[in-house]
Image 1: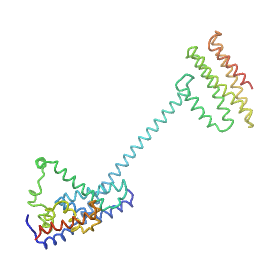
Image 2: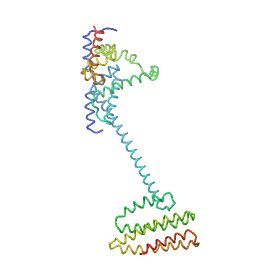
Image 3: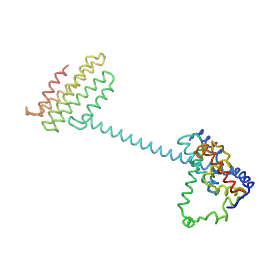
Image 4: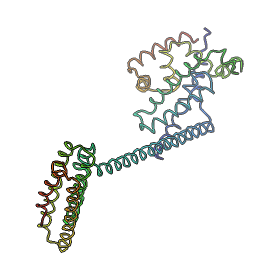
Length: 209
Length: 166
């Protein structure tokens, strides 16, 4: 290799130390980097927006799906896959949401009506053996709501309680008629319908105010 | 990125851009490529700042990115064969200008050729010591070696330099 004088080498070092980009080039490079960053930020924002849309979409799907399931559960009868969701989840939550005694009163009245509807449906769609056990479940639920109603009636001191009582009595009368309808439909004494009526009679006795 | 971080980046860019550019020029022997790699280094640094915040030592961090980018540059260059590059209209530096960037710049041609004749162990240490005038501890941090090792390399490197200088 060719040898160079020490002096030239030292001079070369000084020159090398002053090698630098011009201010114009520095500014151009900086602008390029920053514009690249802006592009990246835009991309990130787009990704964020996109992810927000996805999350929103999934949330909407979840809400819609849950609403659908909740609606289906409310229409279910004992023995249905969604019936436990109705009695163990939806109804307790709905009950919690009823703050005032009047609201609770109206709510339990509605639930009692709902049990009547379930009994009627069970008779129509299930075999005798299946219907018997399912009706027991519905009637137990019915009895619970009636007890709740009685307690509420005793404890309430509100002025509106008289009106509510009248309204409830009317409802019970309607329900009695419905039970009677069920009894008429089931003419044979051994049929499940009669069992329901017998049991319902017992609950109606409790209901009598 | 918030304006505070952006200002910090601009300030660090102004402070270190020439250091990184010189390093790239020394390693790549081509001003255009040195410019591109320098830009890549700071772009990566910018992205890092945005995602993870300021590193402990910006200078050694930038130096590390630069070393990796230079390695990448040579790796890519190796992957693309000369024939393929020429088919795509690429002319080697020698053919385009008749001489390399360093050969055109006689002032530091000697420095470049002399340092390049040394083993890489000594070359990097001497570059940082003689051209960038870093302290031993700074060089140790930049190269991720012990200060003792730096001192030994500088002494031995200088002896090797004496051998190639008149």
